[in-house]
Image 1: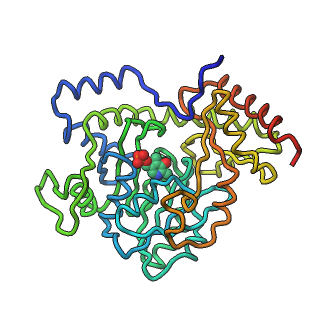
Image 2 (image 1 turned 90 degrees about the vertical axis):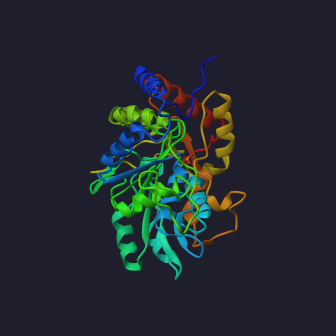
Length: 377
Ligand SMILES: *Cc1c(COP(=O)(O)O)cnc(C)c1O
C-alpha cells in the first residue's frame, strides 16, 4: 500500500528548529524582534512601507476592512467563487458582502460583473488572487477610482505571485496574506497586512491588540479592537519560510508543469489556464475542472481518489451554496461560479512531492476516470 498523498504539506529543516529555539531562550514570546523583522520582510516582498502581523489571514482581512472604516451599512464586492474566509471577514467587520462572478479562464473576479454590482452603499472591492494567480488589478483600479471604492487584496494564496505591474500585494490600499500550513509560507496560524499609509498601519496595529497601539499607547475611539496578535514563534518561523519562498515557488511551478504534461491529452479534463506572459503564478494546489458532460461524476471521483490514498478537495464551493451564507447577500448573476463550482477539483501540489508522486496521482486519476466517466464527452 502506498502512503497517503496529502493535498498540502509544510516543509522545514533545522533552520526552523533553530529559530524556534532562539525565541524560547529569549523569553520574548510576543511583540519582539521576530515580529518586527517578519513584518519588514513581508512589506519588502510587496514593495510596501508597512507590514502588520496578525494571527490569521481572515483576521488580516477583517482588520484591513475595519482599519479603512468599513462596517455596518457598507457593501463590499467579493467573488462568489472563493474560500469562505474572504466572506466571513466582511461579515465579521459588520459590512455586507455582495457576491460577484469570476472569469471562466482565470477564475478570478470578473471586473465587468463587479461593475454591474456597484450600488449606492458599495464602499470596497475584495479581489482574491485565487490559487495563486494574480487578479486583474488594473481593471479593478479603474472601477475603484470611478466609484470611489477601496481595494483590499486577498493575497492569502498568493505570496510571491506577480504580474507585469509588480508583485501581488503592491496594487491596492492594503493586501492580506495567510500562513496556514497549506500556504507556501507556513507557520501554523498567522496572517499579515501590507500597506503604504502610516495611519492605516497604526489603525491596524491598534485593531489587532484590543484597540491599543503598544508603542504609542494610543487607543482607538470608534471600535473595540480584537485580540489577534502574531506571536514571536510564528513570526520567527515566517522569516525562515519566507527566505525559501523563491525556491518553493520554483518547485511548485515544476510540479504544475508535470501535471500538465500528464493530463493534457485527456478530453475529460480542463487544465488551469496557462500563465500569461509577464505573470508568475504561486501555485496553490493543482486546480482542474471536469468537462461539463462529466460534471455529475465529480463527487464520486473525489471519493474514489480519497479511497486510493490521494487527498483532494472541491476547491471551492461557491459561497452562496454554503449553509450560513445561502440567501443572505445581494448578488448579481453568477453563472461561471456556479458552473465551475460543480466541475472543479483540486489535486495535491506541495514542496514535499516528487515527480513519481505526480505520476501516481495522474495515473490513479485517469484510471478512475475510465471507470467513473467512461464515455467520450
Ligand atoms: C487561506 C485563505 C484565507 C485565510 O485563511 P486563515 O485560515 O484565516 O489564515 C483567506 N482567503 C483565502 C482565499 C485563503 O485561501
